[in-house]
Length: 482
Ligand code: NAI
Image 1 (cartoon, rainbow, N blue to C red):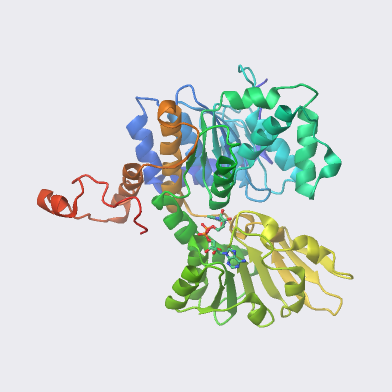
Image 2 (image 1 turned 90 degrees about the vertical axis):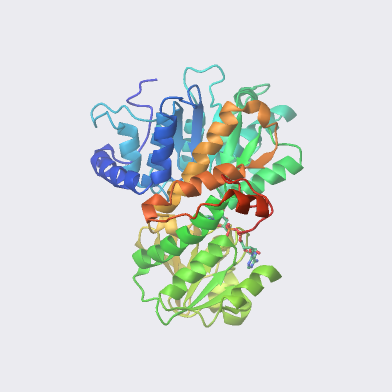
């Protein structure tokens, strides 16, 4: 494969802009840069072929170049059709030493506004390694689990000796996946089985992807070990919360520029993401109402000062609706039909099934119109309009640029350390789902203190003995919840 063609991005000429933003981001990502320095000589990822499926943003570019700096070869796709920042993708394709005419970077397959067919094609390209024994990666870095899912589905069909039937598809996206598998699996083929056999493990970024991994492990179908990066404390208690606190209102502002102060906003779900979103909206002066199914999270929301009620109670009164549950069918077409004129509806959970977009489109006489990319009005037959952001996909990445660098430095330092763990210690991780060891979690936090001027108190040996920990940590038992 000609390296100059082994990528697909929107516009290579955006590379210079991308490189400038990557350079600015590097300073804001002290954890990743410290890891680059620490492991520059050891090259722990030498020999690793990492397939990444994660939003192709500026911050991800710094992650990719960190993996490369540690010795890995990398192929990349975005994990959402709207989340790519085209200048970041271009800069990654060109690479720090290449030019637009002579790109020398990482094979990346990602652009903003992919169709579902293109999206899964990109995922397939990231998983397809030219000139390697199995034609595949030996590590996966996943966000939401789509790369992992594709490999597992392929293996499942090959094991059953079945060629996937496209007409059994349950949704548009399912049809696209089946078409891809249909194209790559012929009678008796072992393409995916072989590809999976060399994969040492996957490190998974988000709640929803982690959920899939535990399900596969429970069902006995998980093919290789996984590290649940999401549940590193320095990931979910930071990225999911403080990241969304930043990027939720960024998305709403860029999409609509509506004044949030004084409005009534409903946040569905009060987990880590919901907590950040509620705070973000309250920070702008909105009156925030929370919905929850979990009594503990409902009580937390109440104690934090939010009204907690059902969507049904407030659907016709609120101005802004945000789903954060990682669950399906949260806001249905019938709910949207009851909303106020120009109510804003968006999702920040990983998949687009929190909002019933299919049901909305089926309302007789409804008219969809594009205001600008990723912002659509839906006009009901009576003239009432609602505004839907990013077609129900995660709005902080669709309408804005996702989380800022500093918080992603924590998540991606976790990712990098998790990749090193699985790649360099395969015997320590038999097939199962693991969380990052706590000393690494604490290490990641430590790497971010200086930049914020934090002065940590040094535990004295007799104090350490008194509370039963080592002076150098870990400082908390595994069950501690932060
Ligand atoms: P979480 O599990 O901490 O929180 C979800 C909450 O939703 C839970 O408290 C749950 O009880 C609640 N919930 C479930 N069904 C509900 C229903 N029918 N009505 C109301 N509440 C309901 O998960 P987390 O970490 O907050 O993640 C949520 C979603 O956001 C996941 O899909 C995750 O992958 C995604 N995510 C998105 C990010 C982004 O940048 N857009 C960043 C991090 C995570």
